[in-house]
Length: 224
View 1: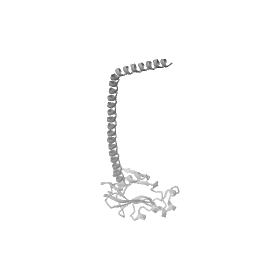
View 2 (view 1 turned 90 degrees about the horizontal axis):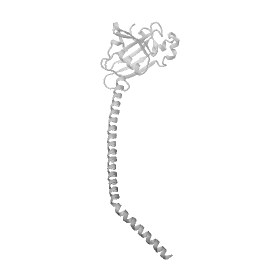
View 3 (view 1 turned 135 degrees about the vertical axis):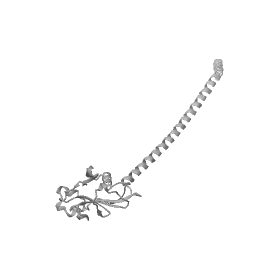
View 4 (view 1 turned 90 degrees about the vertical axis):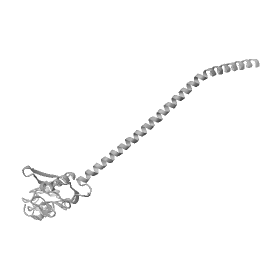
């Protein structure tokens, strides 16, 4: 039994030795292969790092461009808001209002279908400081502000006279409150005899659009 064990052990030893010898002879090739693999891995890693760097740089550049574009859009929006009177501006400004309070004193003459749309205090647009552009007229400002505030306004253009006649504001029309009723305007407390399309604005003006039930006399002006 002992002899058999020795033979088995010797056989195992020889086999192990032979395997080690074979492994040694092929080690160089495998070593070269491993070195080549490591080099490839190193190159792949460097490429990946470079790609990440490029992506990061590109992302930062894109973010920078996006931020600049957003700022530019914000600037344009602010400038537009200043033009339409959404902010209290500096420079060319007027105080502007739309008032139909005279109707409250003449409700018995008002078209019954219009009673519900008359504001309780008479203000369609209470006095507010707004900006205007050089060369704008009283009509231009009315048209721009009613459009911006989504206030109904209807007018008739008269090319021959180069003017526009305001028929209705906030669904209140001429003749809705009697035969002498309709819209007129005042600048600095005075009812002017010229059309609103021909009256240019000046800094500091007080512009009032008033509904009259007595051809202008009830709002401080002569008959119109």
